[in-house]
Image (cartoon, rainbow, N blue to C red; front, side, top):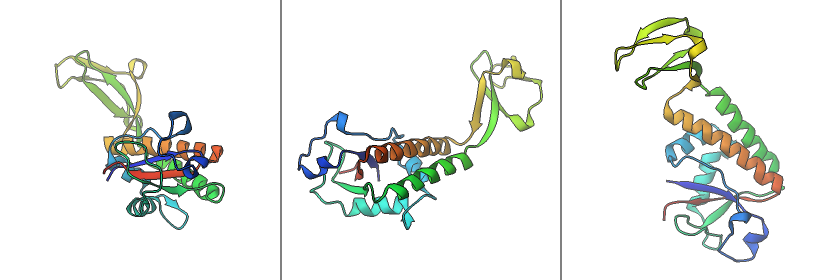
Length: 189
C-alpha cells in the first residue's frame, strides 16, 4: 500500500475546505517505492507503537471528513499534532537519523573505465592496482588520485530507505517547527 505524508496549517483542518494550496502544504520527497518507505520506517517508534503500524492503522480508519489532496490520495488522518506530539515526533526524527547512520553501508572508492563500466572497491580493502575491464578488456588503474568519487556500498533498496529516513526526519522537524499537524493518507483508492 502506498502512503503519503504531508503537513498543513491546523486551521485548514477546521475550515472544511478540501482544496489545499501548494504554499500551505509541505511533504517529504520520497521514492515511489513502498518497500523503501516500509524499510525506512521499520525499527522506528512513535509514542508506544511502531511508526509504520500507526500509519497503517490510521489509514485503515481514515474518516472522509479529513482533507483529501486531489486524485491519488484518499481521506487523511492526523499522524501527529503539535504541541502534544512534538517530543514524540522529534524522537522519531532522531530514530530515523540513527537508523540511517547505522545502515549507511561501507564506503568505497569508485573508478570508471573508458567504456563506462564502474568499479568500486571498499576503502578498507583498497590498495593501488591495475585490473582488466571485464566489459572491454582495457586496463583500469585503481589509483586513489584518479578515482571518480566515493559512495556507499548498499543494495539499492537500502539506499532508498536511507534517503527516505533522512527526508522523513527533515520533514517531521520542519512540520513541528511550523506547528503544523502531520497527516497521512493512502495513495491508492
